[in-house]
Amino acid sequence: MRLSITHDTVFHYSLPARSNINEVRLAPEENDRQNPGGLEIIVDPEPETGLSPSRDLFGNLVHAFEVERKHPQLRITAKSDVETICGKSMAVETQNLSFDNVKEVKSDDSVHEYLVDSHYVAKSPEIWKEAIDVCFESEQTWGCIAKNLSDHVFTTCRWEAQLIHRATTAAEVQQDRIGTCQDFAHLLIGMCRSIGIPARYVSGYLYDPGLDHGSAASFTGTNVSHAWVDFYAPEVGWVGLDPTNHCWVDENYVSVAKGRDYGDVAPVRGSLLGGGPKRSMDVHVEVKQL
Image (cartoon, rainbow, N blue to C red; front, side):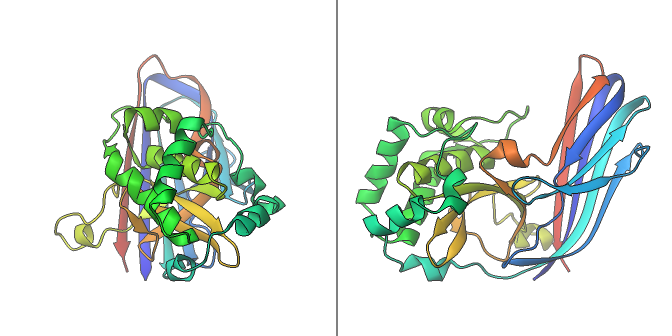
């Protein structure tokens, strides 16, 4: 499926800002589930030295820029297109999860950082126990356990949009049972890691066929950037699950960046001088089928 994406972010300042330094992760990545096409990132006011591309520690494409002169607002618009294909859920649903499998994965250095604690995801006895309770009621396969953990987050937590953006930890989400897609992803990652399944945070976009064709929405969380979880299974690799919509990641999903948690993949991160005491951010995402 061929998709076009427009991601528009506007920062409003009560006083003029300057020396506005930012890095953005807004480019669809190339992997076995998608092939990116064109990409255009427009910054207004235009940066004095343009955009500088690089790769971070997780292989994500990052564009950095600075706006030195004074400005009352900053707008970042990314336009891209990408071709997506189905994921690998069927290949992992029948793969046995045994002690030997888990021990083998834990000794794999390439996934070590997705098994240990990170800034927003720390394993705890409470998270471990909740994950174990779900495991006892699951068939002992990688796919069934991971999918049941994802469905458990969906059924026991309530989605609620944030008026003010604030990333929460897995422990906070477990206690409050409320949040957004990034919060549900943090809790699912914590559960997976606590029982020895490597899990990473993925940011990107979700195509909603209903909205695209003028009918009711088919998914939750489609008008802003979306987040879900990749878990790792031997001989299959990384497989995506969306706890916000209790489904496998398929051709409707476009991944942009991956990391240990939200702190590694924020779409826009920066610093500035001035700007005044009152600041706000408006984000709008539109994903359409070509």
